Length: 67
Image 1 (cartoon, rainbow, N blue to C red):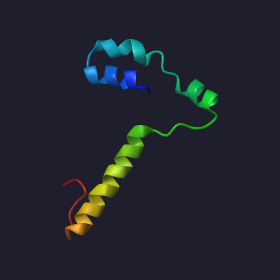
Image 2: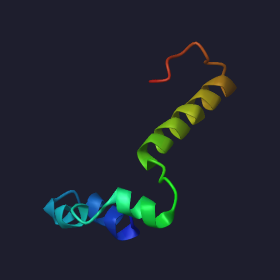
Image 3: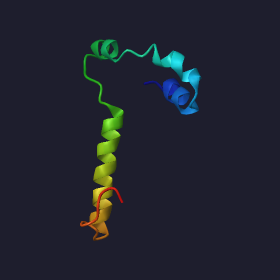
């Protein structure tokens, strides 16, 4: 997704609908010659790892990662 697409998605209204229709991940990956990483999944994994490091540093390993 481009910066313009991110900006449009942050608006939170129907103005982003037109942009979403033009995004084609398969064509983009083919043109790029590589698979594109799912940014939301990557962010979720990095956030979970960060929380675990903080919990370990604070001596809270027994706590749930949801806290």
